[in-house]
Image (cartoon, rainbow, N blue to C red):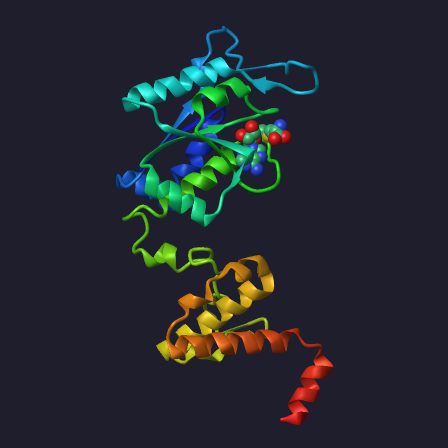
Length: 266
Ligand SMILES: C[S@@+](CC[C@H](N)C(=O)[O-])C[C@H]1O[C@@H](n2cnc3c(N)ncnc32)[C@H](O)[C@@H]1O
């Protein structure tokens, strides 16, 4: 996969994208991320990329022409038009599902990072195929959203992570949140690791993780739980684990006195 990022801050993006797992994936040739300084495509001596907004108001707008020249340079190098995404709070919100779709459809993308008040609409109309938002909030520039999208896409490329389960056994892959994780020591600040994780019983550990994943999703993201397709829970065993999770979740919702009554009734 190749990702070209158009930005006013290539050094900041390179520093992040050349580090850690994504940096190593680039060194090993699984993915390529190239940044392009939009300023280099200006035709004025000051290398100015922005100007006042027509119609008045505060701030500055990134002009269409430097963006267009930068975009055209990348497409010329690629030998044709490349699917282009403008990182924008007005776009569709990035989810794991959106990232999966993009990864399946395209092996080359251009990500455009805006700044100031945004980008001249005419550049968007002419060159941009879609807009993607990092969430319903506004940040100063498109660099952090572009890096988040690039990282999310690259970690799904075969070879980047040791095996497929490294990204499929994670929150949001199957519509659920992940179970809690623990590492050494067994006890920290008086808090113990759940007994089952020390048992060495793989089946029980797997069931506990599934239950915790269900319960965490029910508690924290009822919107996701509502959409979770329960028909994919097939076997009798899996249905039992689901029923246990539901019972445990419901018990945890009851006020403490009810729980006490339930205990004494048993
Ligand atoms: C200060 S913002 C401009 C916000 C714009 N005036 C608006 O109200 O929609 C500057 C740049 O940051 C980026 N940006 C800000 N928030 C974003 C978000 N939630 N997702 C993706 N990009 C974002 C965009 O590239 C945008 O052009």
